[in-house]
Image (cartoon, rainbow, N blue to C red; front, side, top):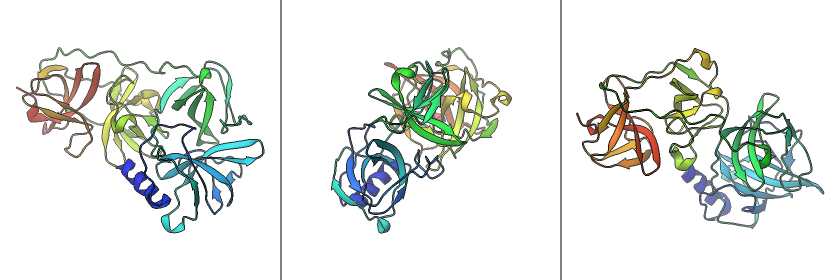
Length: 345
């Protein structure tokens, strides 16, 4: 739905221009002027950090890289030797005064990895990956970094400045490629009874943009075409911890969904207990749709065929409406919900 909304906004704003989902690239952009002064933030929203008096003028040419959460990711030169990549809100159609100079149909809604890594040495981040004229953020060796995405020699990352989130660029060779949290140990299907019911232990607000995977590891399928994540203001119910990962129900504006994020981002996680699953080897009595939440409107992750083997983990509720299961096939790892009647007795 978010991609569709972004596409419709771009069609309205650019007079019929075709918008498609795209991977982030500094080489794919549209060039335009806003026709009004716009404040620039270091992230997709006005709650993100603003670098001094960062703004783009009425006649300044800007590069549009894509959209996210109702904002435009732009790049612009603000002096003869300085450049900045930042974000501005998408103007309401009735307020839009831009003059489009050239267009590219590769510009669309952006998706980011939002995964945790560590720095391999002391380094600095910049908002200027084009002229590389300024060091904006000093980063210590061994610091935990939230990597939004990789591009060429850069890692686009999320930081905190003055208690506000800010997005900037680090040289990629300064960031470890290894996940901060390894995938959880594989669960063996050795149980006998299906009796566990999922229950929330706490409600938390992680306060950042973090990738959410269907299972406890980056090797699991990820919803929303690989872009499923929790946003800074969104709450999540924590159902338990599993080998360094937090099993959560994300209470998103677009609808609730379940998944896993590194436990280190959960506030006061020491008070949350490990989760225990039944791990009963099971077979599907018919084909079933495996979804991100226990309801028929939740996002479809994968269709599972009749007689497929799954590992039953828990019931969604005391009424046993849906079964939470793990399914593996041909390199695919995914956890999600299937209707209870799809599980053979």
